[in-house]
Image (cartoon, each protein chain N blue to C red):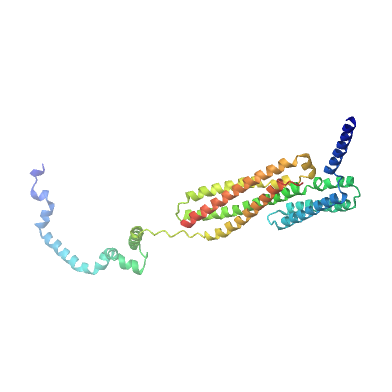
Length: 134
Length: 229
């Protein structure tokens, strides 16, 4: 059924093109476009805030919601970079075990003297036990 | 003939009797007295030596030192009392009664001497065990430090465990010695009951000494391991 309709009925905008209304509409658009230059600041403000994250973060961190992603991104990068840096550093060479073993020499010397006393006491005891006198 | 025979028999009888008298002459009173007094004086010297050992033995516990000093003082007092009785005895029979007391009543050589030496030995062994315990504790700390620093200390730990076992065994053997021998009396010795106690104490002390030497050797081996780290 649509094939039976006249072209003007199937495409209503063609009627505007073909009428003087088209000229009036075009003129109106020109006027609007020319006057719209004064509204550029408000129209582009959102894009401007997003496009300047670095300077905004440096001057006033967390002052606006748009700076948060930048801060998070920076922190995340630093955290990731740290392990990479440690893995590239050579493993530390183990230091020699510092234990004062010389102090044991004196103690073992004292022990030797005690054991020598013990030897002497037992030798005397043995002699006495085998004494021929009462 | 018969007369000659009888005469010969009489001569032989007289000769044999004379010979027997020469072989067993009656004891000279002063000679016997002198021997007895020398025996007493020798024991005074021995008691003085034992008292000096007791005084100089730094490992002796105060209790054992006191008990040994009392025993030695008692023996000395008894001999001091006995000596004048020997000096004034007027018959050999009196001396034969007094002189055996020198040994039998005091047993300075076979009882007091071993008692003093074994007690000193026992307390010295315990003191050596205490010293070894301190060394073992310090070695344990040094081994832990070395292990924390990443060193392989397996051998040192095994030696330390062995050392502690030897110390404990030595202490178990040596600790009771003083208490076992100090109460023994000359009467116990005369009855034959003191000798086994003294012999067992000596055996235990020899074993304790062996254990202490083994513990000391372990300590030296551990020190060398630590020194090599």
